[in-house]
Amino acid sequence: GQNIDQPTEMTATEGAIVQINCTYQTSGFNGLFWYQQHAGEAPTFLSYNVLDGLEEKGRFSSFLSRSKGYSYLLLKELQMKDSASYLCAVVDSNYQLIWGAGTKLIIKP
Amino acid sequence: GAVVSQHPSWVICKSGTSVKIECRSLDFQATTMFWYRQFPKQSLMLMATSNEGSKATYEQGVEKDKFLINHASLTLSTLTVTSAHPEDSSFYICSAREGQGYYEQYFGPGTRLTVT
Image (cartoon, rainbow over all chains, first blue to last red):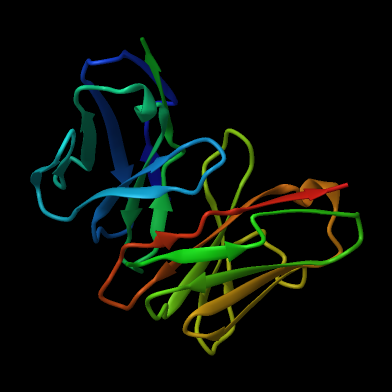
């Protein structure tokens, strides 16, 4: 079966750095997305990785290792508004998005 | 660019009635649209995938006669929850994909359905 694992919840301090990991086992791989979802709102796109390596976009970076079936989202200089759920999703061989359960990130002052 | 709208943003209906939710891609043509359901503190659950002009493909466990999906044009898909029950109360989110070569899904703002 297809499986995506992320930690359920993480807590970090304002101004700090946090890394959210995602491991996956899917039938085929056509890329990995990270989305941010605030409570009661729809997900918003953060990043897309299809090749190994680190993609940096402002305070957010996303890393992918296809051989290890592993990705992480790195958030720097955390702000209170970063409190949200972070969803990892993999595009499988049928170009369907397979979603992880999401990681709830709590930022404390 | 790549804006998806949903209407209504929230709706309350009585048990046994039907509710229609619209999903529109405002500035692009969506060859494929997706309907998700999300219960509180849970992840997104894909309900069905619809391609313009063809029947929707439903995920296992989703009743196609209860959740009617119509993708009549490249910019509009509708989800009708028929004979709604309180357990259908949920956050329904649509997303749209621009073409076969574009994997990113653009999400609508979601519709909060409460069935009393």
